[in-house]
Amino acid sequence: MIILVFILCAMAAIFGLILAIWAQDSIPRKINASLAKDYISQFENSPAAKYAIEQIVNNMAIEIINESRPKTLKTIDVYYTFSVDTYQVHGHTTSQYDADDVGITQSWSYDFCQHRYPNLESNAERIALAKVIAHNAVIQLRKKFPLDKSGSNDVSIYYSEQFNYGHIKIHYSATNLFYEELKSW
Image (cartoon, one colour):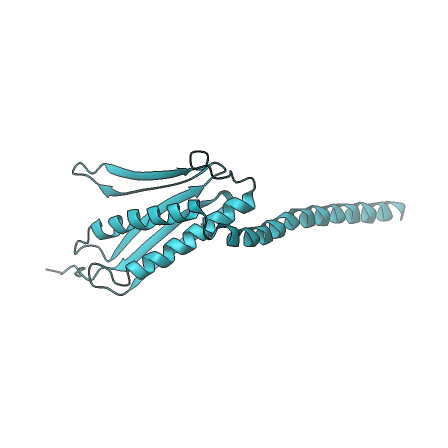
C-alpha cells in the first residue's frame, strides 16, 4: 500500500512538473504575439519599412516581368526573401539568370546604424517590422500585377510566416497562358 501511494505521488509530481513547464513555455509566446501587435503601428511609417517595401516591390517587379514564360511551364513562380535582424533589414533574390545559367543575386540592405535608425532590441520588434514590410509589399505587388504578363488573371501573391527570426519569403505565382499541353504523336 505504501509503495502504491509513493508511485501515485511520484506520478502526480511528474505530471505537475510537465504542466508547469508547458505553462511557462506558452506564456512568452502569448506575450511576444501581443507585443508584436503593439509594435506594428509603430513601424507602419518608419523609414526602414518604407525603404524595404520600395526595394522589395521594385526588385520583385523586375523579376516578375523578366521571368521566362515558355510554353512548357504551367505556372510562373517568383520568390523573394528578406530578413529583419537586430541591426538591419536585408533582402535578395536569385531567380534571374545570365547566359551561363548562373544565378545572379540582387541584394540590398538597410543598415540601422548608417541611417541613424534605432536597433531592434526584441524579437517582438523584429517580428512586427517583418509583418509590416511583408504585408505592405504584398498589397503593392497585388496592385501592380493584377494580371500576369501572359494575360492570366490567376495571380496569387503571398508571404510565408516564418517570423521567429524575421525571415520572410514572398511568393508570386500565376498560371501561364502560353502553356501548351504536350501532344502525343
